[in-house]
Image 1: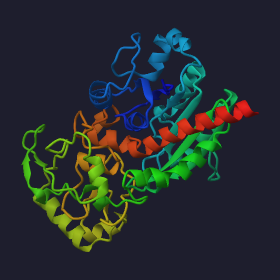
Image 2: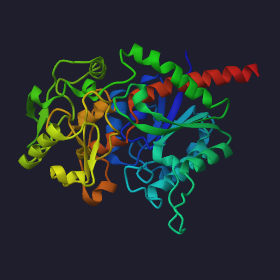
Image 3: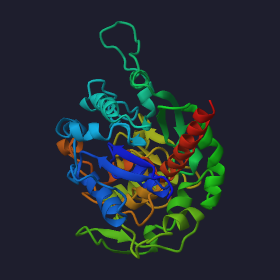
Image 4: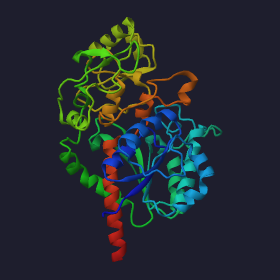
Length: 410
């Protein structure tokens, strides 16, 4: 029997990295995710549909706060110390994101301490950590007159993991170089107890061309190639999960990317492909933007007055380009052909979630609930693209084998 490669997913969200690792042949032990809706999506697809996790009896199969897990199940975590191959995941990124307010005092930033503590307890053989590009940039110090920057959190994490005995390497990677139809730059850190973490990045880079060829994909994929079988003009139906909304249907596939997304168990009606009920005024504005505005460039500042755009900014997508980084705010983007924002399923496509993967929970939320809940759009805006996650999983297996071979030789 081949050895099972085991992992734990922290801050798991709706399961993007876990889905990628599943496709790469890894075996999940358990996943920790605090939000009920995000965990519900992971549970429906990877626990119920795929039976992917060998979930321990001591941990209830529900949403959990990582700090509560370490407090309530410390002895059980100690029992698996050194026995787990990999821990994946990065703490919530809102406090570091350049797209947001970049608040150093954001409580979510402190979850980095919980992440390091978890690694210290479980001591996996390898770790994979992902966060926004802004994670590498220090915060401005308000107390000083000069506009200096504080130390980046990436320095803190790197130092803490090295102190735990890990060889650590980190890079900023653009997921659009790995087959994802989205320009999404992320801080990626890998740590290994034995060997050289640089090996992972070398393998990841060397293998991506062949990996994508086997999938029938180009290295660079466009937004049109990702979602052009999901147009509203295909025809619409009453939404299966939302009263007083319309949902979309499929046309035939028009690219290899779409064929891949619909390859396995794709439903007859696209999941979560509900159209927003825009007002006549909004549709008129969107038609104007589609006719006049530059593609793939954010409309903000004084330029908004030219179009009568009241919101803080919007990007009209370019059909022959990769998408810009999807945020958790769907009204930041205008569909490249139709006068509407993207649907949840179109978000999922651009993030490389296959169509069999159902997204559950509320579609959106607002007001004070925005910091408490993770609805469908937010789940996808926060996710690691599974197609990238699969490449990560394969590269980590090779890294592990390479490190063991060279350790024995030396």
